[in-house]
Length: 64
Image (tube, rainbow, N blue to C red):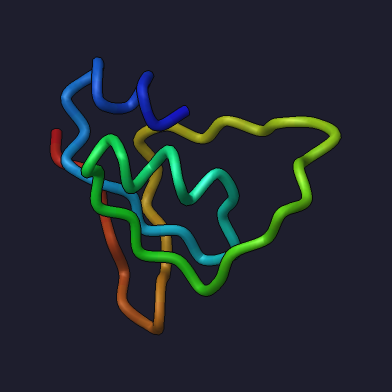
């Protein structure tokens, strides 16, 4: 997902949850702000591109 985001021009991720594959993300020098780290993978992936989120009580909207 990180490589895909980079190829699409994303500057970084804000994740209201845990992430995995931290070593790879560090090697790619891609900024990610998350609540924590988990070695467990997901059984399914839900993609939500370009939607507003609330993170830490702050509304974050995608750039048009």
